[in-house]
Length: 102
Image (cartoon, rainbow, N blue to C red; front, side, top):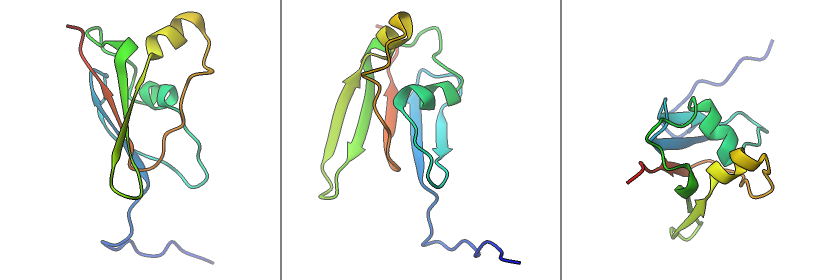
């Protein structure tokens, strides 16, 4: 019977971080072979708080050369129109930041 190898400090569970105006901010693990979008990740964070600016969600991704790329995603428009063609896949290490309304 095969068992899981013991975790070591060198083994890191793939995850994304959700911060800001969501109901359950924090780190979410991504399982092997799992594909997830920004919208799905926010749903797993129990959705937006009432003070969230859902039209300016920031997806922060790091490239292999250490540069950060920031994309602004209008998740509010996606949910209002039920048109998710502009939803974006997340990668391990990504950060999703949901700002508060000003």
